Image (cartoon, rainbow, N blue to C red; front, top):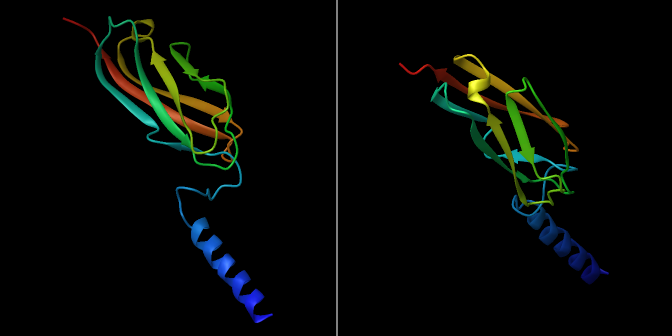
Length: 136
């Protein structure tokens, strides 16, 4: 009996140490975005530029596949592209955001992109900003 108790205790200790390893087990009960960054500043851009784009890289640090269901933008000058396939646990994905500079008036811009998914957070916001300047 003591031997069985020792073996069970040993197994719980080993499994507990493994579960504390942040690279192999998630603290989330479902899928979860872990973005490298959630904002991008384009800085000053000539207004005559047709479009600029940036990439938001992320990892699904959850325990089940992550599926992006939709992306909403604050205006028609912002386009979002992403892979429609599920991102498996601990795999990487990318969301590409483009801004059509010449579609809007010159000046400072600040645009929010809402990413909806089956993530435990349900919605994540990405932000792009910059300043479209007139050429002299």
